Amino acid sequence: MEITRFLTEVWYETGISGASLGQVVMVLVSFGLIYLAIRKQFEPLLLLPIGFGGILANVPVVDIGELTRSVVDPASLEVMTEFGGFLGQIYGFGIDNGLFPLLIFVGVGSLTDFGPLIANPKSALLGAAAQVGIFGTLIGAAFMTTYLGFDFTLADAGSIAIIGGADGPTAIFVASQLSADYLGAIAVAAYSYMALVPIIQPPIVKALTSKTERTIRMHQLRQVSRLERILFPLAALTLCVLLLPSATPLIGALMFGNLLRESGVTDRLASAAGNELINIVTILLGLAIGSKLAADEFLRPDTLAIVVLGLVAFILGTATGVLIAKLMNLLSKTKVNPIIGAAGVSAVPMAARVAHRLGAEEDPHNHLLMHAMGPNVAGVIGSAVAAGVLLTVIPIVG
Image (cartoon, rainbow, N blue to C red; front, side, top):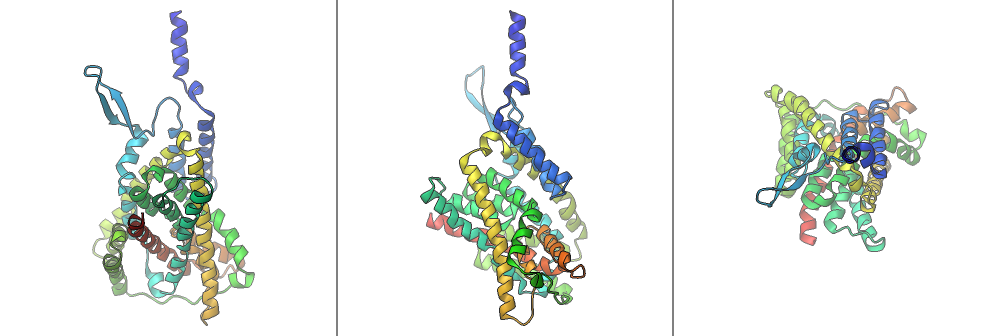
């Protein structure tokens, strides 16, 4: 009898007995992300940690992704709160408080060349146009609440909408400030769409442009001086402080990293920010985001609605960038290849690479990478500005 009870208890502690259908589904989804990372090389630095974190989060019996757990002290019978699981501790340390996004922005700034944007300021319009997806999705979330029975508040809608910028750090930062309950789902959606840029964007671009438009060649960009490169981050930060202080954490982190790069006197710090810092934070960030792929958190109607709205936002932002580029061609004698309008979303540098590849498919001698980097880095700034607007307006309206 004792042996039977012992074997029964052991059986219930195994993963086979404790696994639910939802966990099996999410493990398969996580394996799919790892497949895309390794086989297709879609943003492997993001998808591989996220996918592996998703597997860990769905391990039965143990709650690896649990933020905190309550235990009863056998002596005093008081309920005490302990640290959660492995992934839960990482999530609480760097995502709940918005720290990881800011550190990522320092690293991104140290790797970003704003030269193409400085050389062609008009490309900032394409970066701004791509942010239409953010505000369009804000309306979409409000519509779903009013007519489809969802219960998204204005703060929730603002957090969901920022997915349209295709900027994971910005999405995490905004959600941590406005809608912590949906932070995990928003982070997963934002980073997933960043990684899937090579799949999502090409059909949209081809549907909105003709072959003739996709073969437009653009003039070589002018050389940008060192003084311009140094003044740009300082000027951008000054404008942000004066006009939109709520965006200062994001813009400030980005411009600090860029100033490390362009000053020419802090090469060691710029190298550390663009290598060791961003690599370590990316590992931790990916695992923490993967922890929110747990079946009980992800397979819910509101979470799935967030994923759908994020996709709509991303499509709308891509399409708007392309259409604004076409409009610029109607109003200006200097033609731009409308493909680069798709790079206005701030998935740096993946969106610029996709634009370059699409142009090369039509004309192997058409080099669009540097031209696409202009709207691409403008999109990073644009999404941070949009985040500042949401952080400023929503608390007032709400």
